[in-house]
Structure formats: structure tokens, C-alpha cells
Length: 143
Image (tube, rainbow, N blue to C red; front, side):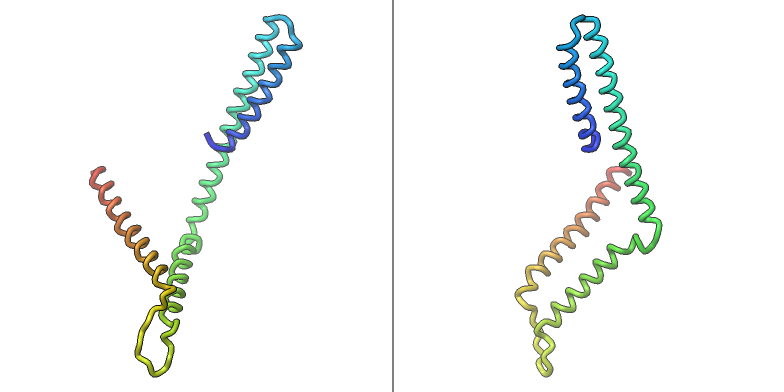
């Protein structure tokens, strides 16, 4: 059950309990108490079902939006292009920083860039080889 249905069902349950306690104080007949409690439970079940339907509908709408976002090339390429741009920009800055002096043939990478480059290489290596290994294991397992 999603957080949305939890919100609706918890409030419905609290209301039904409150009304049930009030009914117990006002109604004296056991038959009337049972009839009212049954009606309140019916209302609570209907509220729970409605909340679950609303949560399901919300999830379906999100899925529709994701599907429509992936129909066009521009929306599919936003993340890869942004990633390539940022990596290119970072690379140019890291290489150019301190290496643009004319007449010197030294190449140095500033110490500030080393942890970033290490983290990127480790993450990308693990992501690529780890995902390829996982894909191969799944493929072997399935077939």
C-alpha cells in the first residue's frame, strides 16, 4: 500500500473509531450498536478501497507520463547529452588548469582534481562492468 493510501486510510480509521466510541455512549441497545458499527465498518472499507484506487490511478498517471517522456528523442537524450557535456567541460578544465603556459612542455594535474577523477573512474568502472556482469548472470540464469 502506498503512502497516499496510508494517509487516507489512517484518517478514515480514526474517524470511524471516534464515531464508534460516540455511538457506544449514545446508543443503549446492543442491536443498534452492532448495526451502527457494521455500517461504520462498511464506510471504512469503502474509504480504504477508494484510497487504494486513487493511489493506483496516481501510479498509472506517473507511468503514462514516463512513457510519453520517452517517446521523443530529445527527452531520451537529455541525460546522456548533459552527462557528456559535464564530463567534457570537467576534462577541459582539469587539463587546461595550469597547463596553458606557453613554452613549457610540462603536463600536471592539479591535486584538487585527483579525488574527483578517481571517484568518477571507480564509479564508472563498477557501473559498467558490474552491470555487464549482472546482465550476463541474468541471461545465463534465464536461458
